[in-house]
Amino acid sequence: MEILRTENLTKTYGIGETKVTALDNLNLRISKGQFVAIIGSSGSGKSTLLHMLGGVDNPTKGKIYIDDIDISSMNETELAIFRRRKVGIIYQFYNLIPTLNVEKNILLPMLLDGKKPKKEEFDKIIKMLGLNERLSHLPNQLSGGQQQRVAIARALIYRPSIILADEPTGNLDRANTEAILEMLRVSNKEYNQTMILITHDEKIALSADRVITIEDGRIVSDEVIKK
Image 1 (tube, one colour):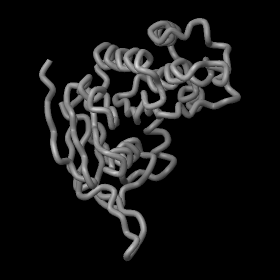
Image 2 (cartoon, rainbow, N blue to C red; image 1 turned 60 degrees about the horizontal axis):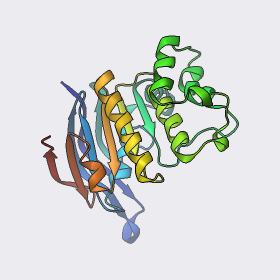
Image 3 (cartoon, rainbow, N blue to C red; image 1 turned 135 degrees about the vertical axis):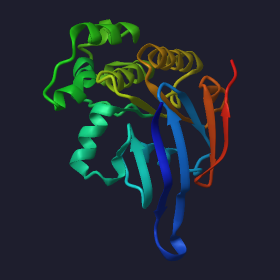
Image 4 (cartoon, rainbow, N blue to C red; image 1 turned 120 degrees about the vertical axis):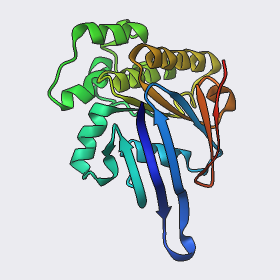
């Protein structure tokens, strides 16, 4: 079952001689429950693609469908609500709110909607991520690995259909990198969530089921990983 597709997705910046094409008529289809890694060198367009899929930025041309809904035609308010409920985003630099404790940072997407998670769901996520003893801590009282776990918990709390992870282990050592990747794999299997992982590290990409390589805003290879 297809959960995401793009049609001739194009993103350009600047005009005239300064015009840069970050995405060039890119067509992509991803099935529900797939764990996909998107790799490419700096400037290849992979992060731009993730921002488009997450509704953080708008395409210059083309369409993006998530669950057969055209998010590229939504206004900013509609996008914000859709993103909060349907798409979880994990950034390299965590993007936690420094004045909120761990518990409130995790619950932020639901608090913005005036909702409360089921206690058993919340407890399950924080137990899986090893955050039980850190709920009252502020972000600056945590290690980098712990902050990334909080960011993952925040992305999971709404049980979104898709998790977009932008270099989520870029600032972590090897041990924390392995732990974070394992948590993403567990969430992928347990909740049947579609994972789209942006990385420049081919070793990390091989933890996915499918590896897509982007160069100059175009897909140059698309491989299923046999395990």
